[in-house]
Length: 304
Image (cartoon, rainbow, N blue to C red; front, side, top):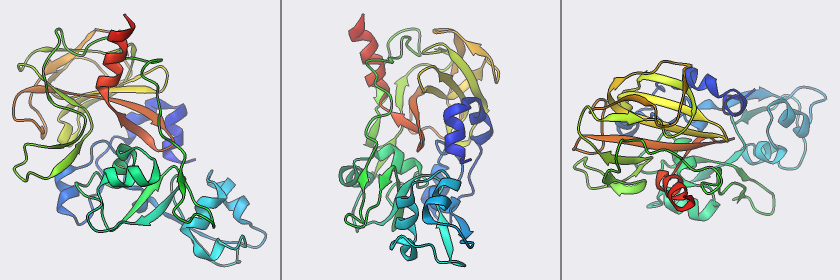
């Protein structure tokens, strides 16, 4: 069974999958270290399957829990609906399509074309600053009449139905870097996707859990520095990065507003001032996809 689908039913396995991925020969990916990803980029997790006698496109797709259209899109010899015996075909880790990127296209441009969140495409392709020449777009269904496919996922968790009831710091803090594409303090001036919010806070400030849940990661995580990941009910996850201190352990049940650590400056922060990097993610067949934390916190405030 594919790793991303295990995570939907067994969220505690996340602690096993938050491991550094083998960076491609690309300085952007090596610098970024793609801490959000569940292992290798999707195109680096392609499997090979040699078609045996009696197999069909449908039976092979069912074996890998994919749609037949996904296999057809990835393998032109299958596009007539036949499965030639002995043919070696490519099996992606999740449903989606492989597309060639036009010069100058951004992750946001791909979102506009395929109606799939830029964060999902970004996470599945190595978290590079700019899309590579060929990318895998998850959640898109190929068809013979529409080879570019159509998106099937636009939202994962409704923040109005499943808000973040607690604030991650003792008092409301100034956001110094928001979610989405922004110019980070890297000196390059090039826009880069930022998967959370950086809240300005002094080193040592207590960090609080946003909701009840279970700790699925607590430790050093490369660019994230000291990181805590908590899974919550409703397919929701929060992440707290660059900490100076971690005061919870793997598997621990956490209460909303419980202190879980302290603000620090570990790892490779995007903001130059001390801050808490806070993320909200939602589970999907594309993995744990970043959502805008402000939507979830604002939903709670409006619901009071």
